[in-house]
Image (cartoon, rainbow, N blue to C red; front, side, top):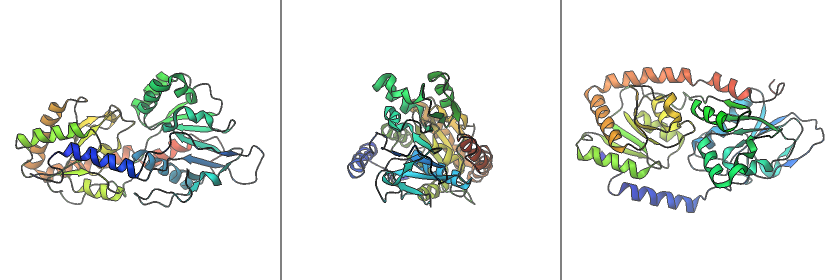
Length: 361
């Protein structure tokens, strides 16, 4: 076995995350203050998508930018709103319209899209402004509910300005409908961008990839078991960390197996993107990921069952190593089916449906 994450892997991963927090502290969890002009204006109606000033890999932030891209592509005036002037994410390629909050004046007919991370402060948005709560992980909302009580879910209940609570998986939709009876819950389907996430043109090397920022202790335990049993002989193990979107996609295309350590996900983008790159996936589905953990391409293990994950991974590693070309062909064909299921047209249709009638040309 060769590896890029040896020794006290979990300890080093934790230390790196602590250092990143010092360099890039988490953004404020209070919704930014927006100027509001209730009088009529002669400009086009706009969709303002609020995003934290967070310039490190985050699937949720990436999808906020994607929302603006899709809406502008549909002819809607839309922009990402950051707190700091001049700030924009740099870890993925984009030409998304971005504006600082100081330059935003919300006018009549505009819509504000706000992520769930702002919790109870979502109700601090100007009264009378239609809004969509884009809740990309309802487990974050549950954590806020446990801390703040009913105030945490006030933005979802009895709010005349609420157009929709948009969630990103069937699992989260069912939970949201249970938590917020009567609320306008809508499921949106994120698309797999096939220009970024696609299989390689030939069988990849025997490489195992995993996200080191997710459940580092359990990842270290699984890898230790696999190493002890000799299951990683001939395999390279790579921790996916501190990489751009393009670099992650390149690495996944150059990997045959992806170990998933997701936990309480809104959808679970890492294993979905790994499948889109043709990897075999083994591990935890984060509950929401059950909708795309299709056997035999993705092997689901009960959450937290480290021993079961190690056993399942050992079987998959042996199968792939026995016939890498067959594994590659199967992964390529399944990636095409996933791309059809999570397609750009469905994403566009779902996002546009959140807006008031007449806002889309």
